[in-house]
Length: 196
Image 1 (tube, rainbow, N blue to C red):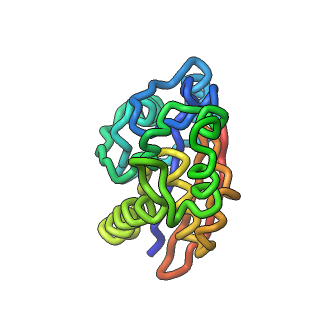
Image 2: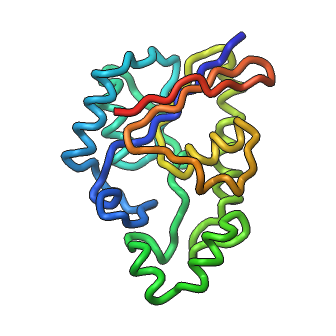
Image 3: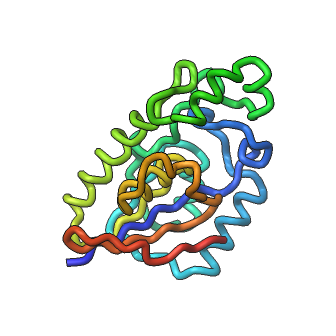
């Protein structure tokens, strides 16, 4: 029995364009983001999922509605982006101008350090992988789509492929991209990468 898992990142927002940290800000797709998602839909044959899960933000909801216009998604906070706390909405340059030491500690070891009032990667891993483990068991043998953000998708890739969590920064997940996994018993294959 093969389970298919599609991890889809939302299209671009103004926060992405300006390279600002965005987790709980309810940013919508910008013009480029909407075009990216349309292109992703038109260039790639979208799966016919048995179930669609989506984080609770405009950018993921708009992505879900564009890719799967006739389907309803199940919204879950488990797929939300890493909480950046007081760094929310700021750029790298802005953060290092007032909080460089803490930022460097976080970059060096995000699994054990957190943005002020934010989450550690271990928090994100527990949240995302707890959710994924549950749905992979519940929907074994089905096609599952999860529409989310860069952080949760990178955590999922790291865990599913048994990569060290320290590789987190080395995994690139572009806006409007699909990571496709086929899972059979304990074997996991990253089958395809698609981008708009």
